[in-house]
Length: 311
Image (cartoon, rainbow, N blue to C red; front, side, top):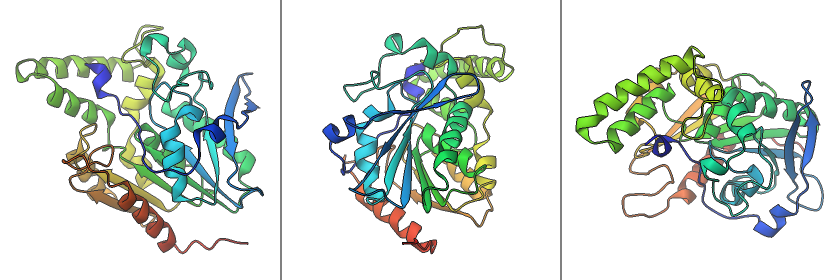
């Protein structure tokens, strides 16, 4: 059941061929603890761009460089920007080569035990600090868990030009999990499952999970972070122009909770855009994609911020 509740990132449109992406070399930054942060910088032309697009993937066990759908699709939002991808801790380009998430049993233990939203934020900021004086404008774009990571970075880094977070759900992750249980489980067992999960969540938030424990492909650090993050607080604290997008028929999250969170936020730096009848993957009830509409709206919002590119 827990596998069903995880939020995954899929994006739609095209701009970079799979062959070209696969050829880009990986770069390393050494952390204070001696571990490496792996990242990829994808140029968009023969000469370096003056602007940078940072793509932030969701919670799946897959190398970011193998997430072709994300790179191809939302790279088209800012087609002239170079693209920065930062690998999750414990993953490398050998994970998810077929373009799909690796099964939990095949997912590296180093990733399961070390990955968390806070770790991802730390790694992105470490890499971005290397580039903040090399680009005129830096734009973040993340979906699902990547949306929450985007919101967290936006609350910390004032050198980011703008950020877009897509389908990140409401204020607390536990509400999204409970929503998934209610939707996926039979009525006669859902209350028991919800109560069991609430007990698990309290133990996770108190850091009482057994060492090495794995639930739904994630370790104790991930569960502690995901259940502790106040997404509303992150958005309210944004220091930069932030566009929060939520598809209201997204069954991976508690859409009603997302509406409530949106209504409670009062930050002039933040804009909201909701889409009635669209699901997590931008499809309507007939299966039609509406990604082009969302891409167009993102471009219009960015232009409305009156951000002047220097040449």
